[in-house]
Image (cartoon, rainbow, N blue to C red; front, side):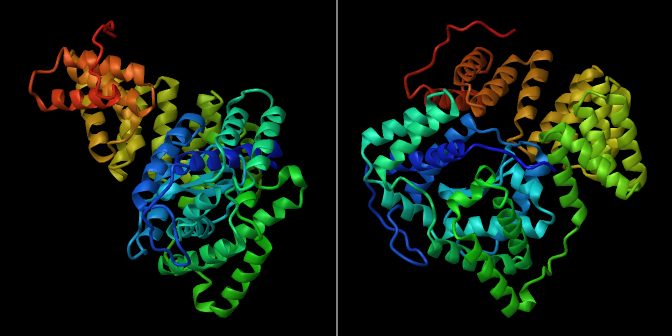
Length: 489
């Protein structure tokens, strides 16, 4: 894997974005306190949830989140297993992967925890991922973000305007960074850099719940050592993670001492299948990283072990991504020969057949994959797509409906369910689902158009029509809705 390069000014801008969003919302003042393990906090949980929602609106608009259900569900499952050890979590936690080849992970307000694909790719085990997630969960639990808000909330509006200009200037990174840098200098306290005390507390609390979840502390130490090693390549390679998580040497020394004095908790006791982590990392490299680096990675693995099924799997994925469909199928079939009961390889083989235009083999392979893993959302979605291509619209409709019964927020499924309803002549449901899809991706003009069109086809007083009217009222700020749009059909 190559070493990711990124500019210091861009890293500074990213820190400022988070700080700006928190400061803008907090500047109006706060009231009720929330108890913390260490000190007085200035935001209520209700206020922090509101802050979290506003933060997520920005993230969804300006950051590319990886939506691959196989990868996302894996990270979410580990994070939720750690959260399940908390006696009374202050928030509902959510876990996200940002598509960026940079070492970074951070906890945003109200339990939104992010990890960059670059950091996840650098990991070698599930234990390392669990360690990072536990540390970030601990920052939220200890309300460290709320403390930083109090330190920053006296910044003037002029400074905030300067930061905002720097962030959204859209010019060169140097110019943007210069404006942002001067704004931070003027504000002085506009920063989210955690203190050494914050980091120590997050490690202590994180280790507590990490070990309760069955993971050892050595995973966190190993990934910190890898992050620290990256720093030695020079200032332009300092991981973003270091900018908000200082004193990494102190943390490593603490963790090493803790492991030496707690040998019974240094290793994981949780039964972990390393293959699942390997497949997640393989998908990230093959589908979301540099394709040449991906080919090099998998070729290297196959030179070391010509019977490495996961390397053939990765090779097949990146070939499919490159448009080399026949070669992709051959590599995926080789992976399947080495792991004949692997539903993930089966599903992606079906996907490769679908991309080839071979709907017959796609349909057969996807049905076989779903026989092993009937709740796999991507497999069910691809089955619906293959059924559509085969002209089985009723079958596709049932597949998309089954998908959304188990995974209601699977956006491609919502979109294609709307399309399928339209092809079957049910325009009320078609416009409704397309409206929901566009609302969720932030295209509110399209959302209003389709939801308004849905009203022309839904029966008065029906549950669906009432739901649409409520959504439109909320989207329009209580001002009613515009029916003067042309139909998509």
